[in-house]
Amino acid sequence: MKVKARKGIRVPREDNARRYIEQEPVEVPESTYYLRRLNEGDLVKVTDATVDVTAAAATTGKGTK
Image (cartoon, rainbow, N blue to C red; front, side, top):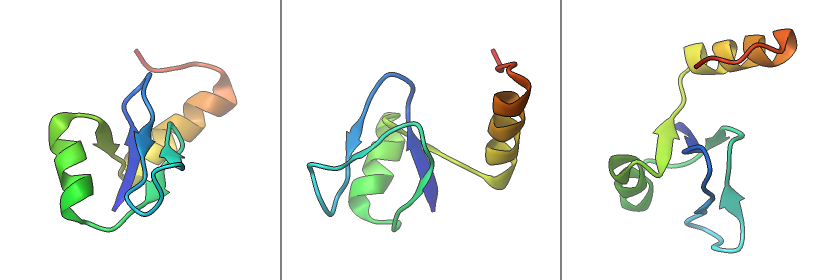
């Protein structure tokens, strides 16, 4: 599954606590650790539609509010 961190925080990766998940979407396994972080709101699940909207906003300079 693809996830990214909630705005304003960094989430340690399960496989290496010194590496962080930030605003760039990353592929992670559906483990208990990541599912718990999703449930707590620290991580946000990213869909293809979310990536397309984010990319479009970045290229046009207009963000979503």
